Amino acid sequence: MTRNKIKFSHTKWLLPLWVLLIGSIVLYMIAHAVQQANSRHLRTLAELNAVTYGDNMIADLYAGISITDTLEQLLISTDGRIDKFDTIADRMMADYVQSIQLAPGGVVTDIYSTEGNEAGKIDLIHDKYRGETVKYSIANDALIIHGPFELEQRGHVLSIRNPVFLQDENGTPYFWGMTMVIIKVPDIFQHSADALTNFGY
Image 1 (cartoon, rainbow, N blue to C red):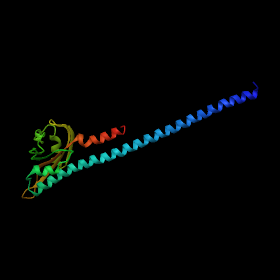
Image 2: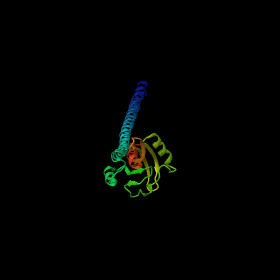
Image 3: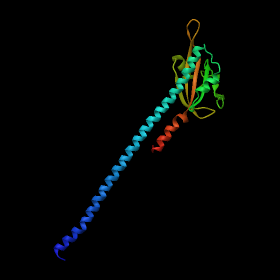
Image 4: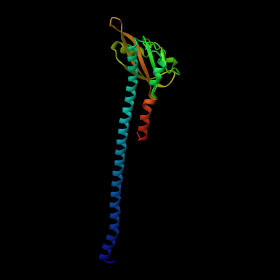
């Protein structure tokens, strides 16, 4: 075989190899770029999803606070009485609300709905688990969101407690009690966790 034929043979063999090698590199770069783009897309979707559901959770908490505020205004307007509490509370109920409660003097006396919540009628001020935060709430006239904690009767919850102060005949404020909403933790958080899980987080 002559020298020219050997060179031609090498050239004929190397050219497909170079094409294959360069093609493989290009394909790898394209696949890597596509994978990175997909990862960025999923991450962006997850972040947007977290923000959206985070906003929903905040909205649910504010809705619970609004219920306690509404009950407070009713108590102020009626000098500490709420007639037909069950009817009023029933119209305020939502999927994420486990119960709506009144605690005159810090003792829970009215709960809607009562089913499964009977154990909730307690003296909040002297309760070993709740007493400290309740006393702080009263002393500072501050709404408190307490929890999450596990109730004896059912699951984990957040408790929104709003201290109510009325005025006596001399215009002096006095502690009437508390309006309360118990929020179901699984309901308020689970849809967010599920959504993030669906995006691989």
